[in-house]
Image 1 (cartoon, each protein chain N blue to C red):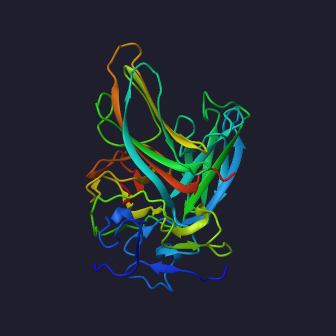
Image 2 (cartoon, each protein chain N blue to C red):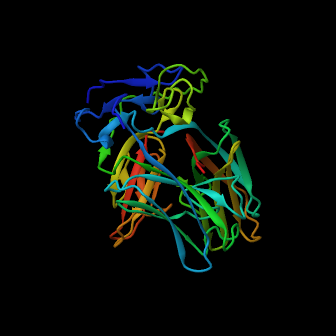
Image 3 (cartoon, each protein chain N blue to C red):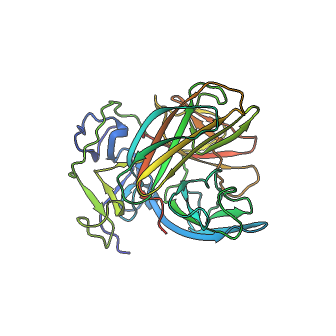
Length: 243
Length: 138
């Protein structure tokens, strides 16, 4: 594929020679777009489960991130990515909703029955239709420049010069999590990068109509994404170019 | 919402007519933005004593953080990168890997407990990715 379009590198990095994963943005590669953010809470029951439900109505499975923001007992000083203090969260992503299950064992040892537990969630606009980005450049130059020049794009209603950095659609000051490959998998596959990438993965267990979090269903080395599931299960994944 | 700003479609898609999800970027939706990434190694005794790697992020709020780790000695795991958290009870050992963040730091915490067997330290390699996007929107 010819490399035409727009590319932006971080300050201090030559945009013509930067490795793919060091570009802030490139029209050659997709990035995950945040469809919506949510906050919610519920209480830890004495038995059974309570659910925090966020309705997205996208009509398809989408990548998501859920952050546990603490509880009445634990406090809200720390947050945990896709887990409680100890275990991965029990989450169900359907084609219309994202549901977080809180049962009597939630955050066991750190939170108590009756505690209010708090969550932040991101649902992406992107789906899991099969996609593999080309590899264009593989230079290993890195930079940590703090110079704030380049370009920035704000959302409607926000002043690009004064809004907070995290409110920007895009900024040449920060990496965009460029998508290298996404789709569905039922067996181990070569990811095509010669380094260990970052990724998001979700599992649809046989018979379920939703995606769940399972830390061991997909693990990566510098060659392959190893899929460790039972017959009938499917892993939905997004692999980033970020090393 | 009025549709103005910037939009870039992927190769093969008409930027004016394709679905928003097929755009590389659009000013209608924020991109998930990375900030700081890094890696390192930590030596963890098998005495249940938690080893904590503290990483200042400089953001003044709680960010999202994703982390992976590899048990370089291969005592209890295949030598592949696992996404944190990992807690597992194996015959002869309990292993706990966790990532959390506050408004100042990211903390990667590792512990091994071989229940007094006296095994030597485990070397754990780790990688982390800190997002600009907030981890706590409460």
